[in-house]
Image 1 (cartoon, rainbow, N blue to C red):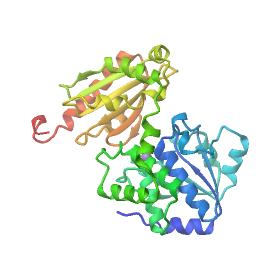
Image 2: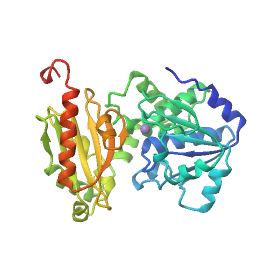
Image 3: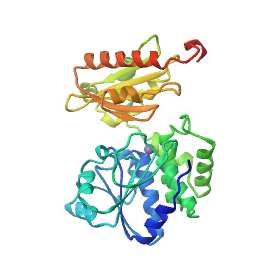
Image 4: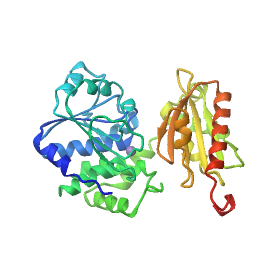
Length: 339
Ligand SMILES: [Mn+2]
């Protein structure tokens, strides 16, 4: 069902002060969608602030060279701004639990709320929702709104939206990518987005410790469930040894998925508080959300996450058991040979 964008146009026409926000640990879809929307709203003469539950990760700061995106923790004036604006626009999440301190302040405000999102799990934020769970990125939805009001993005907005969509689709290889996605991408290139430059800024900025951490973690890749599951883990001492950061684990679970015959993968990442964050991934014929939900987490069919208590061996056993059950439940109709 295509989204009817006219209620959003209506809200924007009648209001002036906007606060945009997104989820904790913002990714390029969160930040790119916020920036694209902010540039659009300003071009319409609106006052806009972007206030997130946390800081912009260093590797994504290039999207926001003027550092206009603030963390709510930067200054008490920002909490005041959240309370005093006319409209909150929440992008790339629909869950209170993902909004951290911003959510807490928002809950006490009577301000009008709008959600623009593509995630399945959702709370009732008391917002007017513009949601399409089949959309590969929130960036696509922001572009759809621009199209609906006949707006052509400038080169900065186009670059931000390109980064949003390219990252959330795994550079257009995830099954969520459609020909419509590619038409959006073509329009963003026409508007000046430069794919080669964005790719380099996103993926070719690694520091050596990141590669050293990959070495340690990839050494440990193992398979289970008749080779249908590949997994690995990262400990706090791995971070210490390699001098890498938690963000350096980002792509390792996807590398597990490159093992032939796998339908799913996970990586356990030990946190500073000794708990384990698990990231779950799968191929198109397997839905990992039931596993994430059994662990109190959530996400998408092909990419979900949750937190588990230690010790590591217990967490690994639990995950392998859950995957074993779910892989059987979701076995392809003709058996694995016909995959
Ligand atoms: Mn997204």
